[in-house]
Amino acid sequence: TRAPRPPAPAPARPNATAPATTTRKPARDGYVLDWEAKGKTFFEGFDFHTFDGNHGASHYLASYEEAEAAGVAQTVETHAILRAGKKSEYEFKRHTAKIGTTKAWKHFLAAMKYTHVPYGCGVWPAFF
Image (spheres, rainbow, N blue to C red):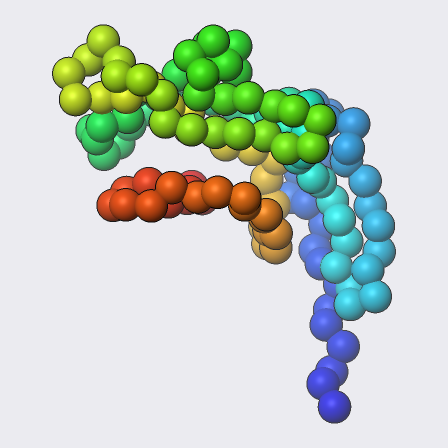
């Protein structure tokens, strides 16, 4: 038999700006749901970043409003969409969004559901 899993650690810092979907639901294996992002409120728990340390083909947009206007970010009742956009005003670059959660944890387990993921070199979603 396997030993029971230890409970998930508490978040490293509380977040007063987290969306209303923040909740704690104990699971039978000891994990606790601390935060979720989904649907119309998906982007409320994220910041938009513009720094491109790779100097690649991305022209990162600075806000949800800017990304939505460019057709790069969108929310619906059940999910959110991030996509590469049209060519930017800079040669060889496309509009896109780089997002980072406003929360921080010492340890975490992330579960994500994708209905479509682009294929090709350098297009896979990443954590930073």
